[in-house]
Structure formats: structure tokens, C-alpha cells
Amino acid sequence: MHQLLLFFHLAGAIFWMGGMGFMLLALRPAAAATLQPPERVRLLSDALRRFFVVVGVAIGVLLLTGGLLMAAAGGRGLPPGWHAMAGIGVLMMLLFAHIVAAPYRRLRAAVAASQWPEGARRLGQIALFVRINFALGWVAIAAVVFWR
Image 1 (tube, rainbow, N blue to C red):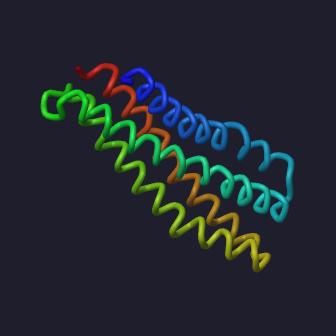
Image 2 (cartoon, rainbow, N blue to C red; image 1 turned 120 degrees about the vertical axis):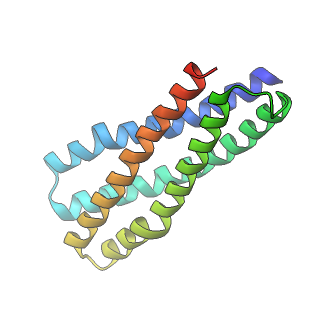
């Protein structure tokens, strides 16, 4: 059972981290280099809508499996890296909730109103927050691997 929980926990983290890496390092730069603002903003808005569904599922899986893994390991006697990973993970989830509730909601409104400069501004805000979350994700991974 432990290995199955660990597998799903890692799968959730890989989907979230991999998706952020793809969006930041591949899709966003390619869209900026090849598409005009209306098409670029629409494409990235739709890609984020789909990606955020995946992130929502990944967060649910991470919370469930992480909680079960920590409970099975006894909670208080866990390595410090596990606690750091859990705390950073919660911070990442809160930042994701902010992204969806504020700049992403405003991005969708800008797209619906064909306000491309506002949409581009909101995409820039989202990209900044995703960069922060991406960095936090690597810190969480490093904490659990190196801080025993």
C-alpha cells in the first residue's frame, strides 16, 4: 500500500511540476514568438483552463496521499524535509488558489471582452506566480531528498 500511495503522490507532483515547466519554458515562449496578441491570449487562457483542472486533481491526490503517507509514518518522528515539503506544498496550493481566484478570473473576463492588453497583463501576472510556484516546487523536492 505504501508504494502505491508513493506512486500516486509522485504522479501528482510530476503532473503539476511538469505542466508548470512546459507552460513556462515551452508553450508561453512559443506562443509569444509566433502569435499575435488576440490569438496568443486566447490560446494561453484556454491552455491554462485545461491545465488548472489537472492541477486541481493533482492537488487532491497530493493532499490525500501525502496525509496518508505522513500518518502511516507516525507524524511527529518524520524527517524535517517531510515537514518542509508539506509546508511548502500547502504554500504552493494557496498560491495556486490565488492565481485562479484573481489574475486568472480577470484574464477570462478580458478574453470575453476582447481586451487583449489587459489579458496580456494578467498572463504576465500568472506567469510570475507560476515561476514562484515552480521554484517552490523544486525547493520542496530538494527538502525531502536532502533534509533527512
